[in-house]
Length: 263
Image 1 (tube, rainbow, N blue to C red):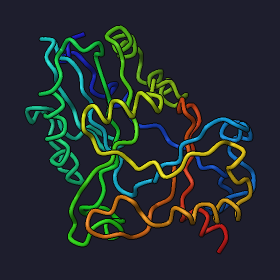
Image 2: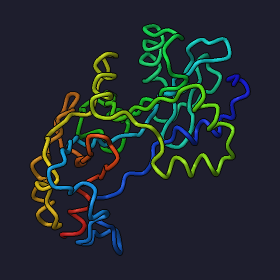
Image 3: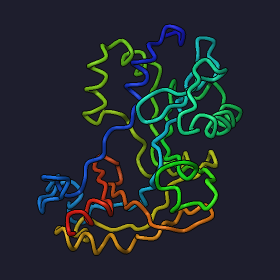
Image 4: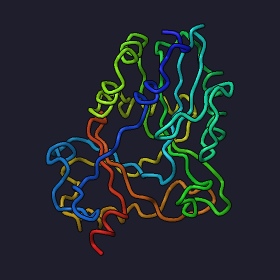
C-alpha cells in the first residue's frame, strides 16, 4: 500500500499505546479496592515477572515504515496524536517531543536498510524531564531525556490488512491487546542493537512473591521510591510496571494511587 494512500487516522489508531490496568481495581474517588484487576495473570505461582521503573513524563512513539519507493520513513507521535512526519510533512511542537526524538529516528534509518523484514516498527518511549509535570524529580535545569519501554513490528501483509479495516475495527484490535509487542528477550535485543536508552529493570520475581493486599503492595512499592533515571537530579519515581515474560500480562503500580487510598 502506498504511504500517500495510507489513512493517517488509521495509522495513528493502530500505533497508539494501549491503556495499562492498575494492579488493584480502582473504586470510588480514585481509591483502590482490595480486589485485584486480574486474579490470575501476574500471580501464576512460579511464572517469572519483570519489574520496571515507571518513568513520569509524556508517552511518545516513533513509527518507522517503508514508503512507496521502499525507502525508510518515519512519523513521531504523542500518546494521542501524530506530531511530525519526516520532511516536515506534519509539524506539531507539543511537548518538544518531535524535535527531541527526530535525531533518534534519523539515526535508526541511517543504520537500517529497506530489506529488513518488517513494514512497520513502533518504538514506544517516555519523554521526560524538560517541561513535563514531574520534571523536578529528574532534572534541575529542564534537560529532556527518553526511555524506551515497548516495541512491536508488522509485516507488509499484516499492515495492509489492518489499514483496510474501518476505524472502529482497528481500535477494537488495539484495545483487545492484539498489537504484537516484542517479548522481553526480543525487546532487549532490539534496544541494545540500536543503542537506545531504556526504562530500568529494577527487579525480577515470580508471581508468588508479588503482594496481594493494598498495604503490603504499598510497602513493596516503597523499595523502588527513588528514581534510577535522574538526568541531573534524583527524586521520586512514579512507581513500577510489572509484566510477564511474554508481556501478555502487564500492570501499573503507582505511588499516587496507594497514597491516596491509604491516606
